[in-house]
Image (cartoon, rainbow over all chains, first blue to last red; front, side, top):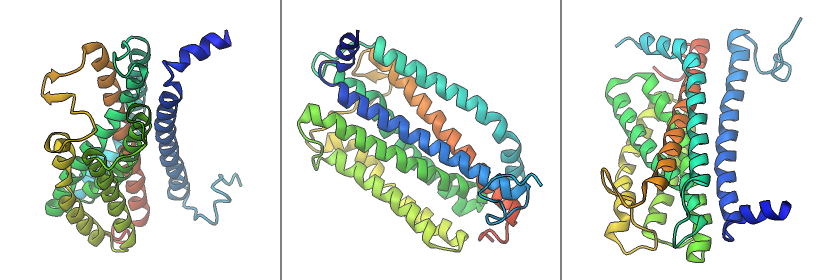
Length: 64
Length: 238
């Protein structure tokens, strides 16, 4: 079974190149999107709760 | 022109449309990958290695398209002066640089099995590399100037000067004898590949464009939130 999947993924010997190009592309795009959303979270923290970076306690909401 | 109209527009609609765009983007990418891997036949010469095209070509198209979009908004900012246009140009430059980097890396990975080398100083590759340097220069220059209004104007000029590189990238494969293959689209509606291979390409191209829209909307909303917090006068813009 594993051999069958590997032979299918091999794709005429180009499997590693195809995997690398798709992995790099979607990994970079995903990381960039995560970075933007994380930045939004930080901004929301001090815009809506009026907290500075220092006061936000590692960017976590202060429940008190 | 009232700046608040644009600000409030972005502030109100952005979160509502982000989710819809994200769903559409994921659908397009899923369909593109599905058709690209399971329905598109192997190329007679390159076998399955041609499937790298489905990430390489859309990223290259996006890198050029985003540069043109930045030029458009740079001109609008230059003459209109609306801060939102500059935010769009600024956020576009980062995702544009990312797409250019992806196009170069995936092209290099494709080049190794097909040409036997990771890199050649070919006209198409070199002009695309110059585009990456233009993007990086644009981002670096913007961050090195504290006065954001001045930074926006200077970056607009840099961007407009760099626009000369866009036709060079596009026509490099026709003007010079290059290792890189010629464009698949010689004229509109005249494709040199079969429709089974073209369909996934179009899906992923739309998916990447939607990703670009998504990232710009999120970035611009971030900047608008900061403006709302700091105030327009404290933000570095006049």
